[in-house]
Image (cartoon, rainbow, N blue to C red; front, side, top):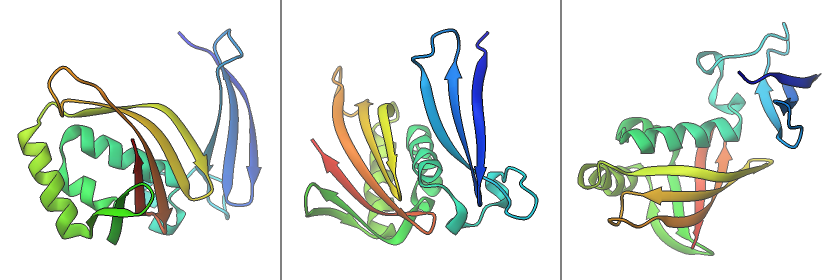
Length: 162
């Protein structure tokens, strides 16, 4: 059983939790949790508008949909006019229809797809993930850095750095 010790600080419409997990205080994280500006209560996903959704929650929902192969949930995390790039500016895909076609086929042909996050950095409306992907190429792990820009609760731009 892990014990969580930490400090909770409420500022305006977000709650910030700095935690020290377990006995080893080297495990630290700061998370942003949306709270109601009127009541101070933590808002759940069902209570949040797209504009209130923290970028890391949007990107995590995208990751979970990817790992489940749920094309509808996956596409729903993106803005309708999303652009996905090979860094710095080579467009791979653009828009919901193209995302649905490319990733829908990918989910069908590679049912064992799975991405794990080795490290995540959140800076403003950008989420930077160091990702390890398995299931694309037999017996091979692919490493990529992905930079997600989240605007109004949807992923607007993605840059893959390999």
